[in-house]
Structures are given as structure tokens and as C-alpha cells.
Amino acid sequence: QVQLVESGGGLVQPGGSLRLSCVVSGSIFRINAWEWYRQAPGKERELVAAITRGGSTNLAESVKGRFTISRDNAKNALFLQMKSLKPEDTAVYYCKVEALISSRSYWGQGTQVTVSS
Image (cartoon, rainbow, N blue to C red; front, side, top):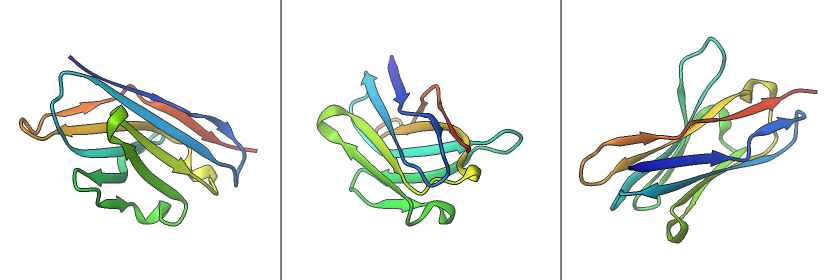
């Protein structure tokens, strides 16, 4: 059983910052890719940021220069540092990992981020 638990969401004013965390536990031997997605009301889920097993990162154009993805291998944890937040960043943010051997994907339950004054 693999579990992903996100935390760190909340209400923040435009221009503010938040740091999301995702901790992975359970029977997953090696992770090939770590990703953050978000889904705003009425919109499709979109990829926000990704970090590969080798440490390469990729960010959506809309968040480049504002968001940073990182991980702590020892703690099996994924982070998303978000700065200069905008109302359009409002969404439920999900972490996702892909197992190296099986290529199976696992999702967290999501954490709400609301950017509003």
C-alpha cells in the first residue's frame, strides 16, 4: 500500500508564498518521477512541476520564476515552493509519483491553495 500525503495548502494573499509538502510512504521501492499537478474549478488537471530520478526539473511556463520543485530522498518527500502567488494559481494541488519498476502512478488526496485578497 502506497500513500501520498500532501500538506501546506491554505489561503494566501496575492504576492504571498506557500510551501507544499508531499510525503510518500508504503511499498514503493524506487520512484522514477515526482510531479505536482493542479486542478482549478471547471478546468482540467494540469502538470505544474516535475523532478526526475536524476534530479532534472521541469516547470510549466505559467509558474516559471515563481515556483520551485525539490525533494528529500531520505525522507521520501516532495516539495513545491510557491512565491509571488496569483489568483490564477488557485486550485487543488496534487502530488504524483511514478514507480521505477512497474511504472505505476500514485496520487495524493490533494491540498487546496486559494490566492485571494
